[in-house]
Image 1 (tube, rainbow, N blue to C red):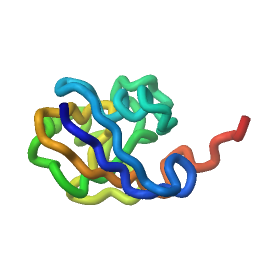
Image 2: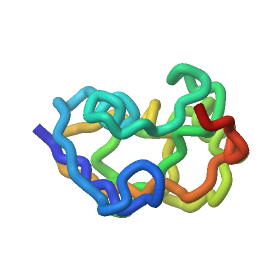
Image 3: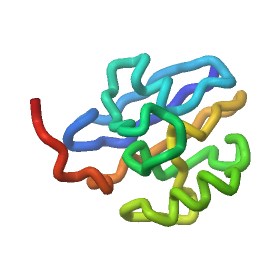
Length: 112
């Protein structure tokens, strides 16, 4: 079972953490299943960029980007060559290291 190493993020996991999930699971689903409340405003249908992550290690082990994801990523804050929408990035057998950007396009979200 692959492990996702999450680099420290001030809101979601200040110390950083790691979680495991079965191959075939999206990074977003794995984070949510492990109580890391990454934003996912479109309910994981590739219609926004709030679940944007940067894959620091293991990028090539993930499924390939499709055209919809590439188009959506063009709108993401802090886009980098290893950026993915976590709802579309499907784990294979290798571990990955991700960084959740400090801001998202939805950075002014309401606090409950």
